[in-house]
Image (cartoon, rainbow, N blue to C red):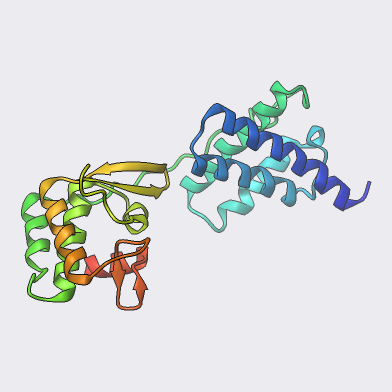
Length: 222
């Protein structure tokens, strides 16, 4: 069998795997990650029949992956591959699960820094409402701490619904609706009014829509 034919056959299993995950109701981001790892394993092993995949093949792939990513990412890859092989086992495509013999890579989670109320106040006081940039920065910081959204969700925001006090975000955990508190609502309304914001994206920079790196730079500067 030609390599191209093997690849098509393998990807066919991956497509069925993706459909099964969607039916289970997993979040889009999780599905994307699991499917990506199943495809990468096939590519690493030169698209073998799924019945020929061994624990050694999986270890080889994870070892290669570990040279370019942090242990946490390797663990997430393992979880995706475990789901893939459980799917193949349930479908009767394989008789044994080669991923079952491999222990999960351990890693130490790095705690995210937290801010005290005094530190949040200091950040907000560094945003002068008398300037164009200060009005935006004050609104952005207020929304960040009022809602607890991730930076990817923040930059995905469109115009809030002023009547329901909500805004839709799209990020790592999928699409969800966020409720804005009084301070966040007022600060955002002031920003939209002073900047004349219209269109699909809420947060703007000097050169267009604000990006995640732009938010990090903004907070570091403050």
